[in-house]
Image (cartoon, rainbow, N blue to C red; front, side, top):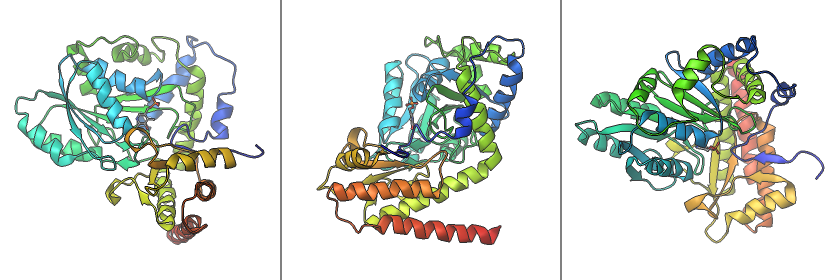
Length: 395
Ligand SMILES: *Cc1c(COP(=O)(O)O)cnc(C)c1O
């Protein structure tokens, strides 16, 4: 294929040239005397991205899934009660991992397309007078359905009840793209990864941990080896790691953080909102439905689009890939064949979105879906030009 392929999946995302260049370096000595001059500022700046002063952010070689394991294995004990909700492939898989670790899972089964069930969480926590529930899980952005929940709402429930459970958040497809505030929201463990909002290759589990969660580790009896928080604390203090870190990726991360900071986090968040609004305008233009059933849950990093019941979403995905070199996200688990997903996070602008939307339109025609060609692209074009005018007026 001549020209760029279109990577419109919610991770890996498009890697900026600056990040790629930063990783094009000779391999380095991770125990060199001057290595901390690189790592200590990196740790400090990472804390700012996670918006924490009192917590710490650890960089494990791994991926988001490893971060889930780190959260569980460091802080909890066999048989501990945890409150969870599954409403998509990712929230569901974290729940399954809790079960695999022998935790006593109280799971709220929520229709896919909805988010964290606040009333159910409230009712269950209210009944838990003896505080047997040790952790509450929140998937900030369910990437399978394009649903964003607000971790701050769950923090408020815990605070209002005076419930001491730890608050665990999956932020793999939100940190660095959506507003996220570790300290203000009282998040105890936040799990992220390198290949989504951080615009990097896969390979890092990026995990923010509160002081309260670190203190809890002493009482945990689950086996923890590779992902040991306290081994990280001890070595990170000196600017080193307990084992060989993925130094090349850390070089890329340095460049990615610099780019996020140069744009400014509030601007990054605003850009994601604007780009997402254009995608949502396109979905409406096509006459199709967003898998997220309510506006309040619409994700600014990924949109899952329901195809008409007469069609299979995989036909759109296949046509997009084979005929136009466009990668779309597939439906996972319960929504397989029902949705295709457009990832709109990371290093992305309006015309890159239009490229993906144009590819989707061609693929939908090939897959025999009935809609007016240009209706989605046109709606997005109108939205983006209006949004630009509004921005220019403010500036
Ligand atoms: C991608 C993703 C994961 C899984 O992360 P891996 O890096 O693939 O292990 C977990 N949760 C959410 C919400 C995700 O989007």
